[in-house]
Image (cartoon, rainbow, N blue to C red):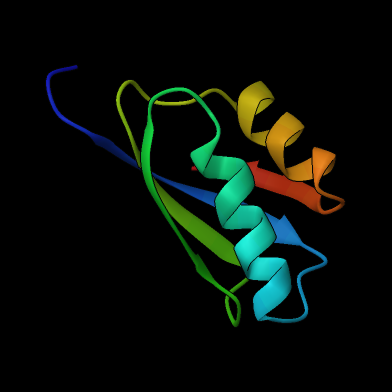
Length: 73
């Protein structure tokens, strides 16, 4: 792909802004991720990456910081 890919990561177990910050930091550590923005109310993180990340990469990043990965769109 030539441009950034927007993906939505569903995350369970976030309760506060500290939780959201931990998830954002974990997702930004994935190679290729250019930005990550968590919506705490909707329990999702929207990322822009080049190339697209895999479910395995997202799951590993989320679970390493103590949250439950609930899917990738």
